[in-house]
Length: 408
Image 1 (tube, helix red, strand yellow):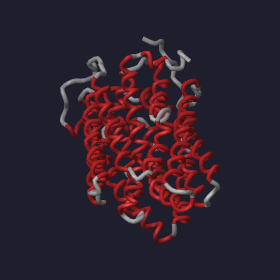
Image 2 (cartoon, one colour):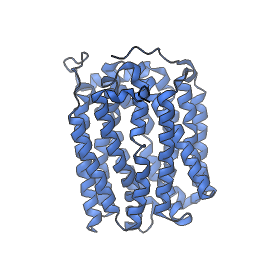
Image 3 (tube, rainbow, N blue to C red):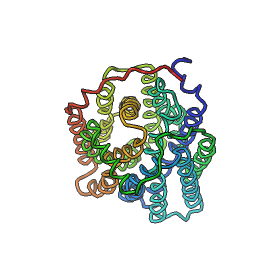
Image 4 (cartoon, rainbow, N blue to C red):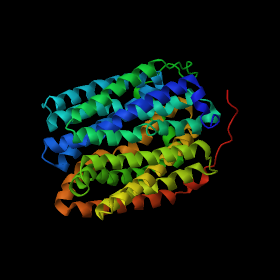
């Protein structure tokens, strides 16, 4: 076990791991609380849920490219400190508004946009930071542990969020999230990273942006697959918008939806444990194969499968996603040079997520026009077709594992 968790022996990675774990607990609680708070305020309107979530996602997408440039210029752990501080303040305000009965869909949408502006920095900054705080030989292990940090304690958070909502306290659940971000900011401020040798006098912003695009284009395995993942993520928003409504009407409400989220979290734990030890010879191929179960939940909701089957499907989906992300980020960090890692990550994130706000915004109206079941069936079909197109890319099959160097 010491060998499997060896990355935690490194102080700076341990701090990053701890901050991620703590904020993941709060986020698991807050997602359910926010969704059901919006449903309560809007009288069960899935369109209102979609609008608030779309504002957060759109703001994150808008700032992503600039975030990549900034994270390549500044100490990445300090960028994450600033991000966590903003998110703590926003979630604190959201929680107090809901507790005080002053929240409206418009206010929540505005605050969601502010939260999203901060959240857009997370992936570029963190993707560049992880290789700087852990030994090369432990890189995949570190990525697996980062995945576990969002789930090993957080898989119980959705159930806790559902219980808090059932008790009539969605605002309290979101205040828990605010506190978790404050603690995460304190931990990240203690990280010590050696000055980067690749940092030179900053070039003009647009030139750095263009250089990042050139490196992104050079990494053909990212460039050739990202469009398909982006379309799949667009369709996948049917789950985020319609699942709370379907569970509320057919499975028992917030508490049951909390159990669904917890089942997904259990799968994330299982997948993280698998990638602590498993080092496939074709990590990118395995990563893309393991992404396939993620869209099956929409089909299950469409057919109103028995609740235990829905839970089992979420465990499988969570397991696959954890393996997918750990291997994807490991390949990314091995293939992309450090000096442009955050900028390439920002293009990767933008391509993957740019259509998500649109998907979130249109799911409610589509469900109103064509019905919830038809929308869920169509969304699940699009996701699976996109997964097949990703697997058809030659570069997905080409990349093999790099031999690991000895730990420092």
